[in-house]
Image (cartoon, rainbow, N blue to C red; front, side, top):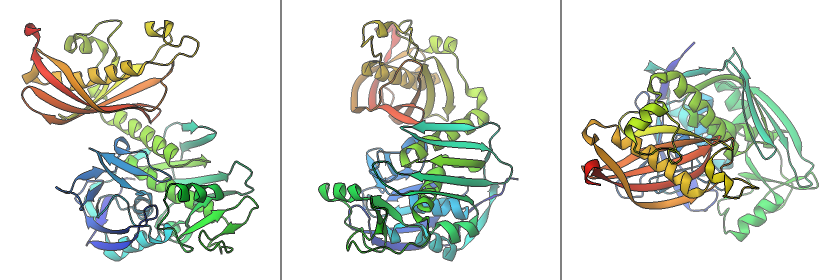
Length: 437
């Protein structure tokens, strides 16, 4: 049964060094209205920019989950979001005075305690619930997450199996609720491998790591403190596997829904967790907004492009006035594969960007006031090509308006495959009269 959404009754303040940078960090947890979700606010920057904790805002975090939105970043968000998932806090504004959240013991316990002490209160709106009707699977590089239907809430199993000569293996299963989270998950600390800390030193990271807030797993099977090298006393025999569940629940919060499922995660990390959350988000949006589907015939009415240069097969959904999501099915029969690395076919990056530009054109030209105009791209900024797009892939195309004037528009675009970012760019368009071209 759906439950009421929840927030906290009063603000809570926490502070301490950030794990990676070592700099002092302060965060303020503030009650939020229904259906707000989780919003991070950078109070140290002009205009206090807001970053939504959504799958579309996930950035490239180094050994953590980060948000990147309009060139603003917040890192290491997974522990506060895990506490929210575990305690069923759905709406929260999280103010932070830097680009990284405080480490606070390297676990979720201090965050969870602060939420409880602030008072968790119900709100007058229902929390969305996703009940799976069939299994959902994501996988990458030997890691996998499989979710199966379950009528009894959320159960998570994690299998920790380290490569590279490490002897550490563990498995942990839990049915997630507020009591089990506080007693069995929240105190579990973050950990790294021997070579991780060598990499930290090389990159001048880990300034906030202490003997109390992190563990080092060694190839001889021992667990040591990161600074002194002394043997560490584990809070649970399988503490590293439990911490992986903490991270998973934090990343699951990006889907903005309760999940009723049995989830088995094998060797997964933040990147695959975020891809899983994105897959869940697509399932929710397809259920909620089927009427927003736009097929290729309607696309041809709006865009002037034609085969072989029409790069958008359909529009999956339209979110309000400022965001649109499209789809490009990458077929082995695409004409450019005949000459572009035919023995190892990949979609040219410039055509990925063209697909994004056409999706942005659909967003801009569907507006009534832009009837009879053509969207001409005049510049691109922040272009990144991150992933090889191959035959058989589905390229999900996202475009969101950042600024719009009568003749000029700036649009943020991103293409993903299986929830993983393949390409992105910020594009500027001039809206010109079609009969003047």
